[in-house]
Image: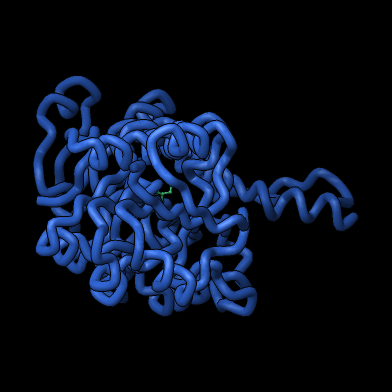
Amino acid sequence: MKPKIFVTRKLRDEVVSKLRDQCEVFMWEEEDIPVPREVLLKEIEDVDGLYCLLTETIDKELLNKGKNLKVVSNMAVGFNNIDVNYATELGVAVTNTPGVLTETTADFTFSLLMTTARRIVEAEAFLKEGTWRTWSPMLLTGQDIYGSTLGIIGLGRIGEALARRAVGFNMKVIYANPKRRSDLDEELGLEHVELEILLKSADFVSLLTPYTPETENLISYDEINLMKENAILINTSRGGIVNEEALFDALKQKKIWGAGLDVFQQEPVSLDHPLLSLPNVVATPHIASASINTRLKMAHLAAENLIEVLNNNNPKHLVNP
Ligand code: DGY
């Protein structure tokens, strides 16, 4: 008998057939609507595996209902939506999809940095609204990228990929990370610094650290107060790493210059969120890894991880400690 799995979102046919080859598949058939919690709580009761997205909260209540559950496969590199410690206690494997989204996410992070620095969204609206009268010396002037300092908080795979791009743009790159990466310091001329130094000296601060209890609200009033007046904050990690009230105050009072935000504490962010009212914020809907190829690679990798566990093999990417 094939193991039973529940998939929390409609996936491309090629991924579903890969899963169907090995499993009996039950799937939430909507592409753009998350599975309601009550449906998930019911479906989990009877399955051996769960294929989920970052939109689902896999907590104690849910895990306790999964009496036959052997694996939770998250189609994301981040896994803050899952209570991994509790899953581990129950003997449930948790897997994720690192690696395949690194370059795409770094591409997006760098483009969000450039878009925010050069006010591209504002400029397009200015033109399309018919406000453009003439070329003027200081019209829509932004911040320079070349020659500036990028501070990366969290130098993992994506941080490294971003650093490589930044060096190519003639930026100086400093980073705050639990571990010093001497190999990269030597190869790319990076500099490992304390968080406080990074915040005081960077023109761009990019958040690329995992979201954990330790990094929740990592950037709040005190930290933002250290930042330069021309500084731009770029967040392509998780919204909870930043205190959004503190960020709003700082942007409104022009204590810092701008922010490029792909992630928010609550997603989807509500349209009346104060941050969205600011002209110096570029906001996107959590799409840093959203290239067609990369999203397909993530979907396939999540399927492979799940199948490996159900076949009693080691998955490529196990998250449990
Ligand atoms: C992840 O994988 O964690 C991203 O946030 C979505 O690609």
